[in-house]
Image 1 (tube, helix red, strand yellow):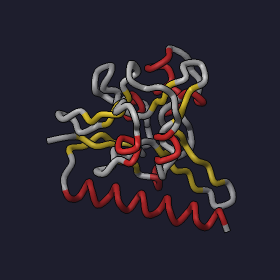
Image 2 (cartoon, one colour; image 1 turned 180 degrees about the horizontal axis):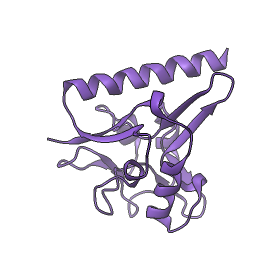
Image 3 (cartoon, one colour; image 1 turned 60 degrees about the vertical axis):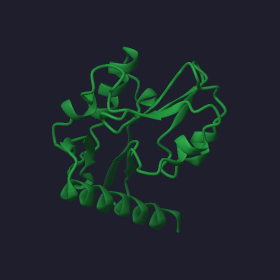
Image 4 (cartoon, helix red, strand yellow; image 1 turned 90 degrees about the horizontal axis):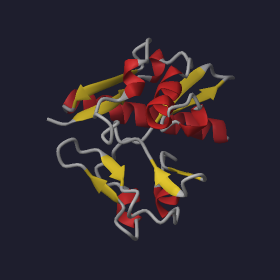
Length: 163
């Protein structure tokens, strides 16, 4: 069974260790701006919400990509960007409703969380999340329900902030 990255925003302390672990694993440097996971900090509400690619069932980023550079790994069900096919058109960036895909200027190609598939398939962010706000679990109905609840909470929080 495939694993999914589960986010528990109520446990997040905004330590941002997940961002540092991600950037170190992928780029060999501590640079939160290069992380594929971002902690959104809402100071007035004291709410911290880590966000990353949710590996959508109907991934708009993959559907809109004109070069088919975003593909799903059938074993893990995680989407990844194929560097050799990506032309940096930013269509996937525009299509992602969560802002989980970014185009890094140095490379000129899209990047997103792929659960560290290109390295070893063991998300580094989870290993360094001491409050256990991030977990990498076998997907089942309960896990899927928690993912949907987290997405709903993020949506509501963003709507409140926008007002």
